[in-house]
Length: 248
Image 1 (cartoon, rainbow, N blue to C red):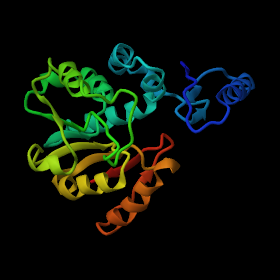
Image 2 (tube, one colour; image 1 turned 45 degrees about the horizontal axis):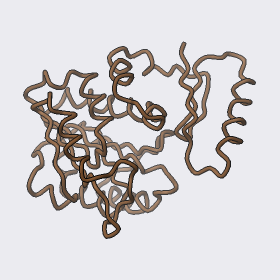
Image 3 (tube, rainbow, N blue to C red; image 1 turned 135 degrees about the horizontal axis):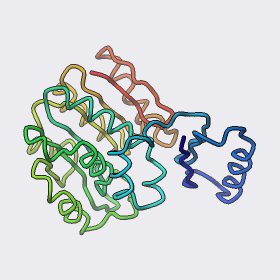
Image 4 (spheres, rainbow, N blue to C red; image 1 turned 90 degrees about the vertical axis):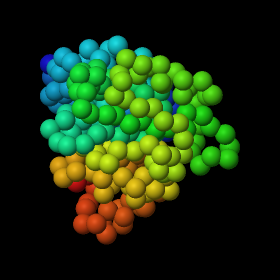
């Protein structure tokens, strides 16, 4: 049984002291298996079944290159689960705020998405940042990022990368039926806007993952989304990964 040990944690005043404390705690565990550290998670005696998923792990090792990408493997495995579920249903796949496209590229490799010629994956992002925009800057936002992400998916004719502000850009490029959707926009207004346009297009049984729902730093999204879903008879499941989960 494997472990997944990383040192990428967020919101710390003393990173070195925190990681030393985690290591001391790990040393106290009797069975040194099934341990996960990173992405503000520390747990043990878990199956961590995604580490035994050969297709997923091969894609992960190839494409997850940065410490943060490697720390969020549990989040990535949640997305893969939702996509695999979606492949049983009608419709296409959506990710709003794909950033560098790492997660979707891992997923596409793991499920051989290029072979599913009847399905399409729609990716959206601003890819760049300036102070007038409501989202916060990410380290690799740049004028070049859009082209880099398009190049990353050049071998997938059924993946469309669109630059623009959600929800405005959805009027130009968006599927009519959705089998899986992932929202990771770090902004309550944008996510509600995406839901207003796209949620009704999700088919019964489709999975929606809200990346920031459980994070205290993005509590505004939870406070906006809870009543939005409640009006429609849904309740969001908060995951230990910080993600929120809804089944249509």
